[in-house]
Image 1 (cartoon, rainbow, N blue to C red):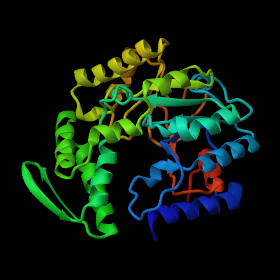
Image 2 (image 1 turned 30 degrees about the vertical axis):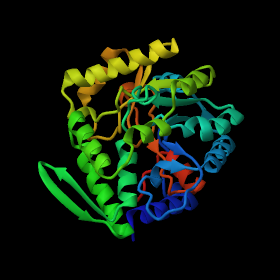
Image 3 (image 1 turned 60 degrees about the horizontal axis):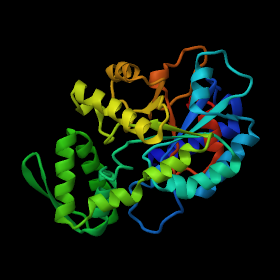
Image 4 (image 1 turned 90 degrees about the horizontal axis):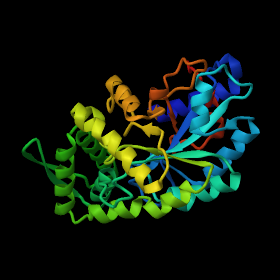
Length: 335
């Protein structure tokens, strides 16, 4: 049985078992989404777990309202995190990656419901110079049956005729690319794209919000725009001065472009391997009021959750059960 299926079954059992299976914890939670778009055909979709449909987003918001959750802004999260728990639990909706479908697919749903949300922006992407290497890697593997590239100064060759082999290679190469320093990662993905005729620059621009999109979002009082560095690098792979520069430059570019303060930050990728405790101090020095991770968890009230290491629940697009979502948001500890 796959770990994903086992988790899904545990969540369903926890829901139907009620308090016999799980205990509610915390004052609320931050939900993290990436892509919001209709389902696509195709057997090879390694990033599908990063996607939800507009219809699911609509149903989820309706469910949150029905369950009497307060849907609040990231500013309000910061306030509630340092005070005693409110009568109602809260949820904060956040979106990473600065994808175009935030404005084309998610915003119509969110604005119809009149709920606040936050978008974290790595500024190289609206500037048109960001490199969405994870999308390019997907495209290369999807269309090829044999792939060659240089890894550690050696030419490597991979046969990927079947879907299973494609998934295995995507996992292997994405993990390897994330381990590289920023300049080496950029050189490696550009080499791969050149070999297999993938236009990395065009792919990255087409997938990302531009400044016109962000200006439209910024005009909505329910929208908070946060920073996510310039190039969205893995901070733990960088020297401290370079990592701090990524934080401060991303903040400065957004503030200059949008003419407003940017107080909230998202650690790129956000897991335990991508940033360290020292980056919390950098975020504070850069002037951020909060910083979110992708480490799962709920927000504990009365100052027990650090504002510069806020946990978030990443919604797995392969799970479509609102029952599972309700269990996860409760801060359930599964057996």
